[in-house]
Image: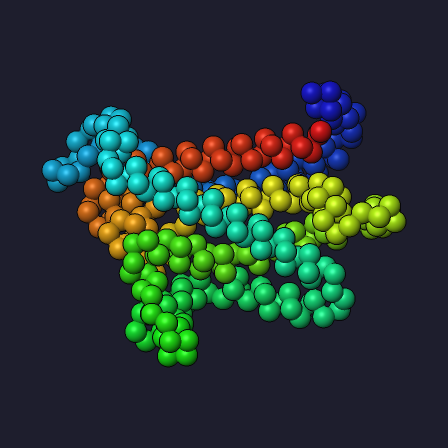
Amino acid sequence: MISDVGDIARRRTQPPRIRSQETSRTRVRRAMLAPLVILLLLLTIYPTVYAVVASLFSTRQGTPAFVGLGNYIEKFGDPVFQQSIAITLVFTIAAVGLELVLGLAVALVLFDMRGEHRLIRALLLLPMAATPVAVLFGWKVILDPSLGVLNWMIGDVLGLARPDWLGTPGMALGTLIGVDVWQWTPFVMIILFGGLTAVSGEVVEAALIDGAGWWTRLRYVILPALQPYLMVAVLFRGVDALKTFDSIQVLTGGGPGSSTTTINVYAFKQGIQFLDFGSGSAAAIILLIVAMAFGKLASRFMAKEAYA
């Protein structure tokens, strides 16, 4: 407020020619931002508002009928939707947890290496650089129960029974978590590797001189310093894992049965496959609220830690 008053006072004391130039620059900046604002409205605000409105209608009878919050109430009474919530939570917690552990381990190993870590780091980033759908179809071929190279090694080389990685209800979700960990651990690793470069070498060296072992240095020096970077990784990967769709749709399609049907896949099935747009929109809005709540909690925790 004080800065605004000061800015107004400063402008009033400026010569008319300078005020005119500043006004022209402000108009140019607003004109340059206008297309971005319009694009944002078209791509995010409009679809969101449309989904909220669609979730208040039912199209099961062909003609849209206003049902208010009926679709939302119905969701929480649907056992398949309840199961999709549990599957979404299991997938998110397991995938993000494993990616944090593995990402931190790889970042620590690379940080202790000298010179050669650049080539290894570039190779580790390949899963992120490849086209996601192409990579997922590659995994589908690798995991094929009869023709996949993985089962060939297990069956013909090791002489063990060939598992159906994507066709067994108890195994499909674990396989999807494994593929997600393979694809996104490099993302977590690169965040934590950047955090390690910011850890004070003097503090680590002082702990080493005091006789602190590797675990003690990790527990009491490195991890506290990495906490903001860990929270950033949890925030980005948590929200992304909650709305994972492409890997599940390509590899299992939500099956077998509904054993890998997350909320996002449930919304797709309801809205696109069964043409019940209201039900699908309601599920998508619930997922949006969950993701926003998670992002808000993580952001508050990060802000609290930053000012602690």
